[in-house]
Length: 396
Image (spheres, rainbow, N blue to C red):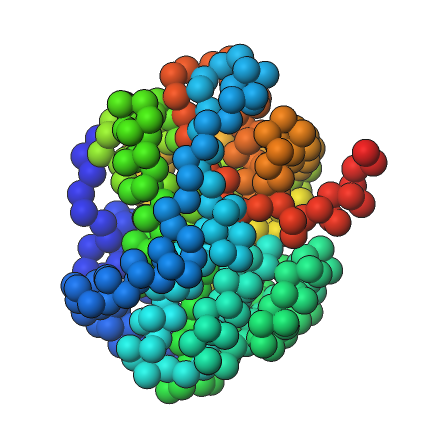
C-alpha cells in the first residue's frame, strides 16, 4: 500500500472528495480554503490554537488503562483515549476551537452549525459564546427529542437552536438547512461543519484540527508501553473522531485501524447507517463524492441508529479512500450491541460512554478473543447526553 499526501490541491482523496456545490458556494469555499492554508502556516495561529486546546478545552486528555475491562474480556490490553474528559464532553471542541479562530481571522461574526447528537452543536455554541459571536444551530426534530439535554445546553449558551422538520428529521436534513442559511448569509457567516464531510476544504481542515487526538495518543502509548499499539478502534459516523485518532498512525503498517459504523437494527435497507455494508455505493451527497447509502436510482436511503451521531447516510471521503487502500478496516455494531456495551463500560470501568463511543466498545467486546497485544479505544464523548434515552430503552 502506498500512501501519498492527501488531499490533492482540488480536495480529492483519490477518486473521493472534491467540491460539488451550487455556484453561490464556490467563492466562499475558495475564500475559506485560502484562509485556512494561510492560517495553518502561521505560527501565531498554531500557537493560539494550542493555547485554547490546553487552557480552555483541557488537553492533553489522558490515555487510561482500562484494567477491569482488560481482565473481564481476557483479550488485549485495553487503553481508552479519554476525549470524554474535554470541556463540553466530546472531541468536537477540538474542531470548533480551530474554526472559530479561523472565522475571527476572516472577519465573520455570525456562526452556523448542524448537529445530530448535539455534541457538535454544544461545542459550537460554547466557542461562539466565548468569542461573543451570534450562533445558530440546525437540528432535526427527531434528534432534538432524543437529545433534549443538549438542546437546553445550547440555548443556555445563547445559541438559536432551529428545529428541522423535513425528511427523516435527523442530521442529513440539518446539514441541508445549514447550507441554505450559508448561501443566504455568505458575507457575514461562517459555517462550522462538524465532521470530515462536505466540500473541500472541510474534510481536510476538520481532520487536521482533530489529529491532535492521535498525536497525543502516539506519544502517550510510547511512554507507557515503549511500543506502538497493535490496534486502534473508534466509532465512525461522518468520521472525525476516528480519523483524528488514526491519522498519526497511518504510516505505521503494523498498527491495525478499525472503524465501527452504526449497524442499527441490522443490515437491512432503512435499518442501519453502515455505509460500507449492504446498500452503500459511490455517490455524491452534500458537497462530496464518497460512499453513500442509496438505492439503484441514486435516491438516499432511510437510515437508523440508536446513536444520533452515527445516523447519517454518507461517510467522510478520506475514509472511503483509506478503505480502498485497505489501510482501515470497517465493521459495525448493532443497536443492541451498543446498548450492552454502554452498560458494560459504565459498570466495569465507572465510565459512561456516549452511545457513539459505545459502538467502538461493543466491537472490542465482540472480538476480544481475536484481538492481541495492546489496543486504544477512542472514547470520543461522554454518555450524560444519552442516559435518558437509554433509560427509556433498558430497564435496570
